[in-house]
Amino acid sequence: MLTIPGRIGRTCEGLSRRDLMRVGGASLLGLNLPQFLQWKAQAAETGVSALKGAKGFDTAKSVLMVFLQGGPSHVDIWDPKPDAPLNIRGEFKSIKTKIPGTHISEHMPMMADQLDKCTLIRSMSYTPNGLFNHTAAIYQMLTGYPPDKVSPSGQLEPPSPADFPTAGSHIAKRKPPVGPVLPFVELPRPLQESGVIGKGGAAGFLGKAYDPYRLYQDPNKPIQLDDLTLRKEIQPQRLKDRFELLKGINGSMPDLEKALNEYAIDEYYGKAYDLVLSGKARDAFDLEKESEKTRDRYGRTTFGQGLLLSRRLIESGTRFVQMNWPAVANGNAEVDSWDTHAANFGPLKNLHCPVLDRSLSALLEDMSQRGLLKETLVVAVGEFGRSPRIGVSTSGNSNAPDGRDHWPYCYSAIVAGCGIGAGQQYGESDQTASSPKDKPVHPNDLLATVYYALGIDPDTTIYNHLNQPRELVKGKPVTGLWA
Image 1 (tube, rainbow, N blue to C red):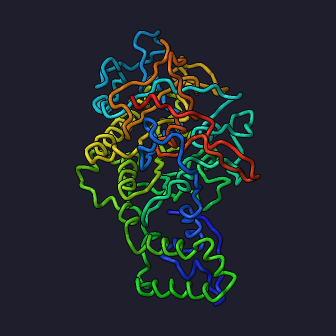
Image 2 (image 1 turned 180 degrees about the vertical axis):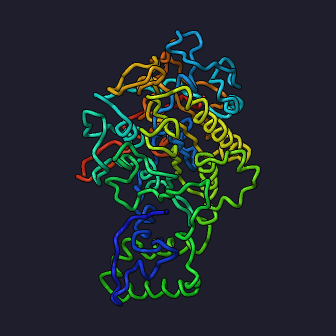
């Protein structure tokens, strides 16, 4: 379902504001959504950035983050090493791409034909602090900060209000969208490793008002849009009457009226009201408006239809969309997970690569044809890669003879849009894909690049839950991507 957490307030008539503004089967017009919509009035005024006019700065209006949680094998997908020993190069052959001199896996033929629309980064790299498993790596990738507490297994504590905010939450606050659209949407499931769910995927100390709008449904099945639809018994005029009633109640209370003027709460309720009645957000989730041909091109999978839905959300004006690979980080690789300890080559050949190849290539092709890449930054990345050597343990995990373990020291990412060089490779790994040969890119640098493209200075000072000053992200933008 679509979930926006929040508190319940009561009016003097005994009804909750959520009751007054309830639509569909879930709360969309309760006190929580006006809080959720406060990003505009509360967005920090940073003045004219010294970066204004710099190459690549403020070129993006929106971001589509394709998060391949689980750790895809860079050696077997994006960075093959055909001349390396068999226990490194693995079972797959490589094929040419539209980037001269750059080859990728034979199981990615459609992406080979679409690489002229993006940049392939082959030098993602970081050195973990101790055993660094999925949750800790995800937290760093999406917040720009290392986790405070890591257990011996590399897992973290559950999400906390003291956590650093995920990137989409910062962006929802600092770059609010225009019009009645959702600022930050996450789909189709939360980030998860074992029992730790949602770590690195919430607003943390920014407050729940900036949490993502969560669509935890399978886009390859009919999507329930009740949250964005008026119940049959509530007509538009009736909702207008309730909205006016609420304004009247608030206006009759001098102290509250003062607060309303100060925080523009009427404006937030107005936006919440517009969000439902305009139908714009609801229409963005309606994949039935797409042709069968387009849906087939993306692939009739959770991931494929999720990317198509992500494109529709970007078109509607959503500022940040995060499409998670629809699997838990340490799930069954034979079914859905990139975490290929027990078996690497079979799942990649039969499931992962075919799905990723079709869907990601369709997204780049579609967004290019629609002109969306001009002002949308697309990033496809996982929390790390896989060990170059097959069958060895690098993170304390056991691995089958054809399995690959976690490897944060070198891996790959795809970036496209907003003037980033199309049809180029950035950085290179060594002869075994073990470490960058040149141009290393830390995950924090990639995140800083996202902020930079949106016109947000990565060095901006933020304040945590203890009112302590912190950098927005401990990284520097990779301006060389705008070649």
